[in-house]
Image 1 (tube, rainbow, N blue to C red):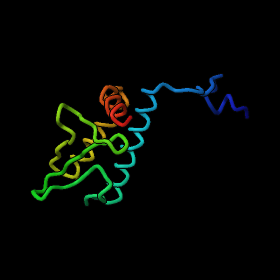
Image 2 (cartoon, rainbow, N blue to C red):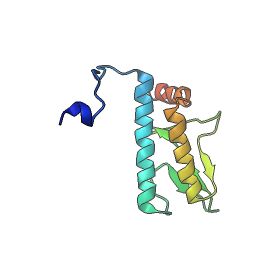
Image 3 (tube, rainbow, N blue to C red):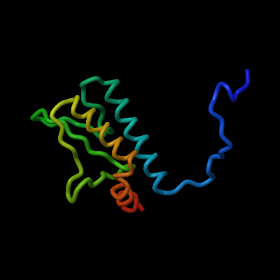
Image 4 (cartoon, helix red, strand yellow):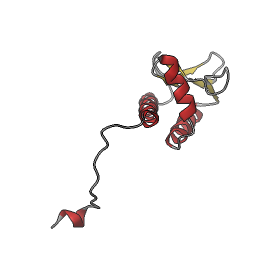
Length: 117
């Protein structure tokens, strides 16, 4: 059996340098993935202090996405997403992941990255 029958082969090489936009996206997507896995492990309980997610005394859930240790300003003066339930937290993290993959958060990530420097 030949490999050509098992896979779709192509003569492509991995780029030696990726664009800063792509690097920021990948870093943020990895961070979102970590938050999702922490939440799935805890199943309905707020994760530890280092996570992006917390629950207020009134029972509302909040997601405060970060780029590194810097909170991301999603809109002027707004850096948290208010959620109504645990399931809503999961949905909003999935939305963040989709928006990042589509490149719709590139400007926000660039601002957060330049704030770090």
